[in-house]
Length: 180
Image (cartoon, rainbow, N blue to C red; front, side, top):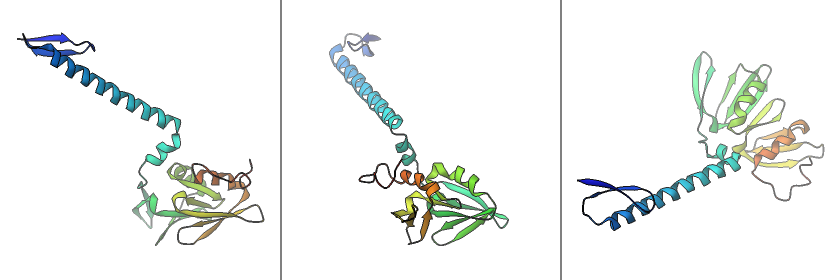
């Protein structure tokens, strides 16, 4: 018959009647300690993710698929492939490296939807995918020139220059570039 014995750690351990309890007690203590360490590590990770909310966004996979309606059919594109979005009247162009797609949608609505996926607004008619940005340089007018992979350059107007801060987790030696 099996009896339930309580180990010093407070765990129940089942042992055959008359068997030595010391081995089972040690196993139960070791298991309990491993469980506590695992739980503590999980809580630490959760606290770290709460402390650094941007890490959570970076930890998300970047291959989010979006369905867009183009010429009467639905195309599925990965947002990670979209370099920029440009407005043209009441439509927007989704620019990828090799192709572009015209959608009948306002830039404001698209900007709102894409912001959480790494796109920033740099002009009243332009959004860029932050993962494609290679460099920014200030212009004498107070605006910036932003270059993406492939060499295409965009003007960042003074209205949207505050959005450039989200291009990196932290900036070194840039106090003069982004006055508050």
